[in-house]
Length: 132
Image (tube, rainbow, N blue to C red):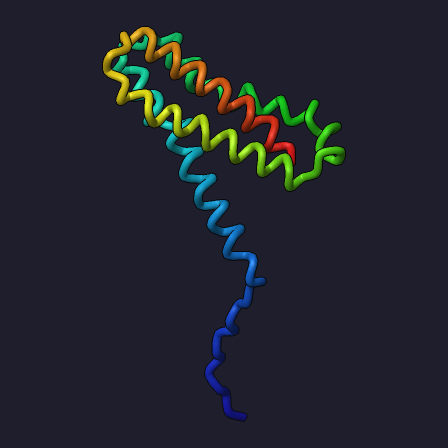
């Protein structure tokens, strides 16, 4: 009996799977930037207190609770509509957060307040759209 080398089988994906992979990549990158260390360091550089940094770090877990009440509305609106609205609104808030460091004419206290507002709204939309 001869043994032939085992050739690896090629994994084939559905052609639309690449869109899903790109979506997941974008989602992971913006999630890490918005809710990770960069925002904590930005708050710290603006002179944010320990309370401010704690709020920045705790917004993401707190707002995931919003998935529960939105589960009722998802079938009425549609899963695709929820995800599309959620990602569009999140991108808008990311744009506002990206512009914020360029606004040097604002006082640091005002920048911290705007950062917390945008992060809160980003996390509310994230919590709502994650239900889909």
